[in-house]
Length: 339
Length: 200
Image (tube, rainbow over all chains, first blue to last red; front, side, top):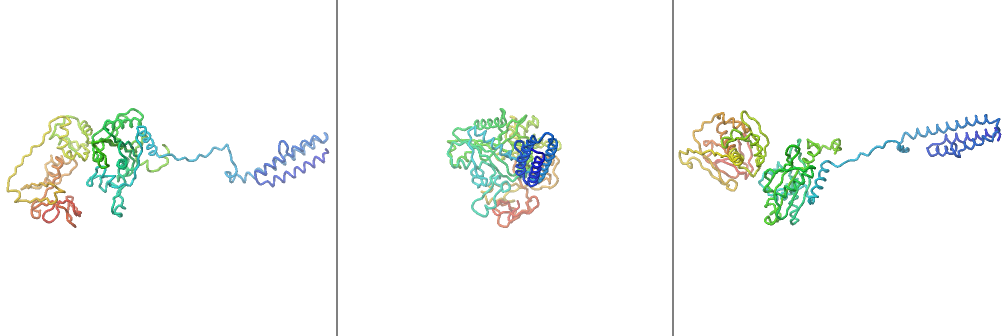
């Protein structure tokens, strides 16, 4: 091959490649141009390079020099085309470029509220002790919230200032309704439709018009337990509560009963758990009052039972060292994401 | 219910410490709220559950302590110097609503001189959180805090017809209460009235 012919080949290659690269508008065309002209195996530049060997030896230095010039020309045309295309692309990088080396942006994943977590744990513990979960409405009538629980009409617990009565009650005229002030309402509903024996827990919201402070909130959660069978005694109550306390607190803890009074249990006790060096009150309990058993159609001579109610917020606060109940309901993600 | 450490000793000896007393009472069903020092006395605040109204007074708590420590409880002796004319010639008491108030009792005391209370009485009332008004009002409060029975003192000369009638309130009635404020009385509410209007 003569030098002139070689130069001709080079010029055509240069012209074709420069045009192709200057026209390239996207990454795909640029890449196919790169393969066509600069491809390491069968690119056209490579073909021309091979022809260099056919040039007579005395003309080879000139041919080589010219080849290098063209090669640089093509390379720089490719570079500038690439820069041009990528510059356009970087304005919307997510749309076109996936960079597998870039650290990922994590999805912000929510988590369950600490109270919900506590409720799940309590259900799990009581489930192992054979208690099934029962549910009831948060809007109640006076029969389930008071009457059936041995709280007669004149009782101070029924004071409008102690309860959230619904104003629709006055409008409809016949039934007074209120937000339940205790989960004991569910006891009545379950006993009304189920013959004994019964072994249930009920967990949920209750409402009392307290002013919110570090230990009070107008809405809070209770876990109510009820066991009705033949010959149930206070010893059973104490065993169940002690097993519950040991399971929840993780060590073998003692519990303590202090005499108290509730209209729906007789006798009634306050329940203290041993906590660190002292005793902490976690709720109330007692043997179901015979009047309550009668009001749901049970025979108090046949069956006896116990009931207990524990404050879920209090259990959760103790577990996590939370000192203010209001934190639960501020919905501050910085607080909630710690659980 | 706030009880005075010194006052309790009228009825029962207190050989234990105040902490031990509060703890033991708490363990028998009288939740101990707190103990505060008032002057040279201690004010012990106990929560009385609604099944124990017998303990809404120093006598009741004293009786409870007597049982818990097995020490004698001293009920003050009642000495009444009842003389003068037959009570029915002085004042009539009629209960017209026995379903709301089964029993109403009164006594006429003559020659009362209204004035300040003695210091010991003022101090005992201060310990349990009550301010002194005058000897008559203070005595009613003192008896309330002693035995849990609410009392009311009336000026016999100002009772219309010299009578006390316990009855249901009528429509549109109102009364000025002990806090000097006027209240409308819901019909059917149990009121103490003289011949004309509710007085308590």
